[in-house]
Image 1 (cartoon, one colour):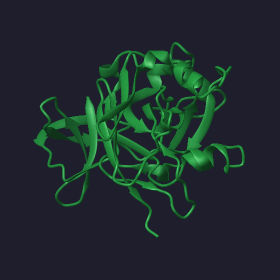
Image 2 (cartoon, one colour):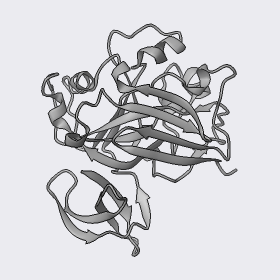
Image 3 (spheres, one colour):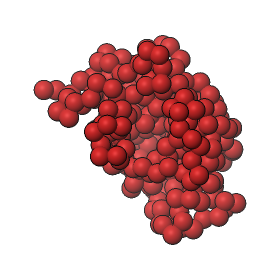
Length: 268
């Protein structure tokens, strides 16, 4: 099922099921409980991110070609950093370039995001996917100057500005995805394809990521996990390419869809 979260004509938040023809029907129930398709047409006035995350955990350097382009060795263990839930932005809403804590090196990163559907701790590799409710597109927007130079050796300052975690356009339940490490994944910037690869290049596959993050650690329902980005990011290009006001950036993942956001400057 492709699950959307949206505002209707009355401004009420609803859940719906998106169908292959582009139409949507209303869902009843809870995202982390039972959902029932009512069959009633849904009027989508504004599409929202598929959920408000309980937490956002992110894996860095998880594609071999991306590690190579950055001149980094293949990590022994998954590289963990975090974004705050307030960084989430909706499909179609702008990515805002920071100007109070200024960054002129804001980059795109297409990522497969997974959503934990039930309480998960010490998952085994074989059972890890049983805890995944579904998958969505994410853009791990990154201020490279704050990430690499001004963040006190930690990545989080450069990764967690407001609007730096677009999610959407829908949450596709795990049964419709099958193998999450067999998906095409792309970034398109102003009509030009910048990243175009496959999730099979992950150093640590999705079950290993869940196994690692749940080790001696409770992952609550609604935890969103970003699983890394392939090669082709802006900072590694010659010359580098960074997001500019007026840009439009899209993340596309096979079997999920297309997440598009415009880019604007933070107001003075």
